[in-house]
Image 1 (cartoon, helix red, strand yellow):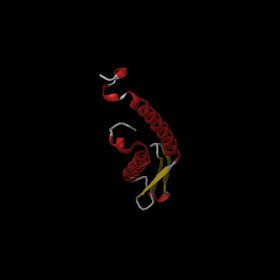
Image 2 (cartoon, one colour):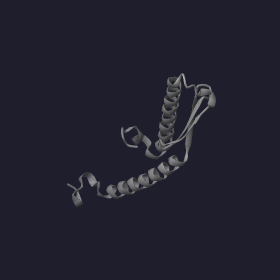
Image 3 (cartoon, rainbow, N blue to C red):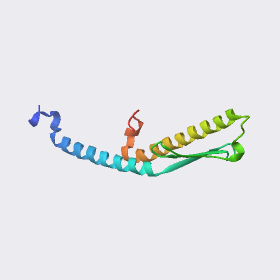
Length: 114
């Protein structure tokens, strides 16, 4: 065993590894703050429903066209809203993946990382 109890002389590399981990953590926090400010927009039904979401997957706005409101067909409006929300969240996921991928490199594929 090498000195300091680290095999193969890894003792000096641990300090560098810690510095890299701290920098990555700082970069991730900055990227997460930027994501919270960025928005994506999904429009469905030819403009009947629009949903705006942040890159942090927070729904910021839902716009519904007056033409989409039919008291006799509430189900269609519900489906449009659901579809627009899911598309906005899918776009927010893609934005987060692209933004965080630059920070995490290959670590972005770890489930539940962000």
